[in-house]
Image (cartoon, rainbow, N blue to C red; front, top):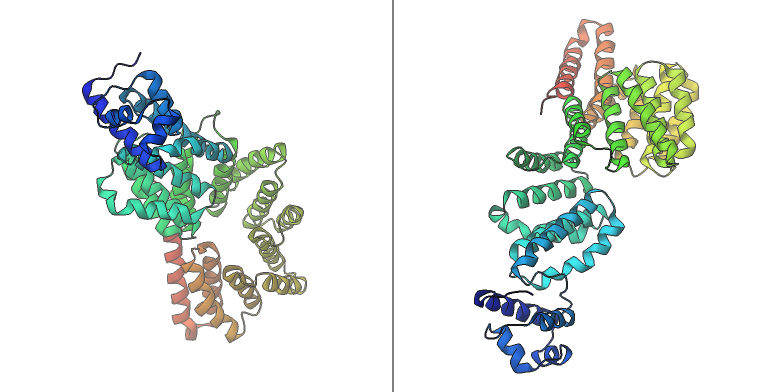
Length: 430
């Protein structure tokens, strides 16, 4: 039996009226459907009549409010349901999460429950972002933004996390990182640790060329990850960690991680991930200067890669680099032409392929001008520091061999190389 005091009666009545109006139902319609009468419904809504358990259940059914917390002891239970929903979203079980949303969305019919509505909106935004439904996610964040200062630390954490994810979806890694770090600072102030946030920060640091910092957050991710959680999340974290290790010349650890990732992808028969790991094997052996083995892995990756996707372009690009490193210049030319054609509309790979072709003719002033004035500035802007470093060091060596007349240009390239080393290897501490 639910005991309702006078104060609860007034609150309950107000909530019933609020939901009834939101549902577009009149008092007469509610009374008729709930086997009651209009005067009783009016008195209940005004707090002048205690609602029996049986009538309350009938009212809930009519208002489709079975999930809405109308009584004080139901609020905590609803909060638990929201948290369970968030956990399902975080585990990337998006179909199930979308089904759960239908029942939980009823809370929006009770705008007076501001805290629950805010939490629901933040979690719904996370779901929309997972489903790549950018417009509704952006709308939610725009509605919350004017009142961010009034949010609790936990709510701010989810707001900043969602803002970061939205920026990632819009390919703005630096902006995303700023929001993720704001969420991280809130987490350090006492909120529960979040391994997805560690991964998100690590991904942004990787995208912005800070490889040691990316490694630090990925290692923290692995510490927090438990065997009960989604193995695919661990796969992506360790594949990214391997890529960071390759870029910081820690080839042995990278190989161990790639072997583990390859076994996982094979076991799950995931062609996309198989192709991605094989591509990373190719990159590993290229950086380790084992060009023949790198070329073998890049060829092995090819059948698994979508020819219209960026991974396929990356495989072509790495194959061209291998050919150049092996002095197979004649064979490389057709591949570069193919890459330039395929990269039409993709500015990054267009410049990467053209830069390689210009590198083959570095003795020509036009080629050097392209590398210095177009390729290197673009690569720095887009955080492709490893490749920018290759070109700046190659040009520095070229000008060094040309003699004193080129000393100014050599020093410029040396300064760029130093700057790039600093960007790539700074940090590494949380």
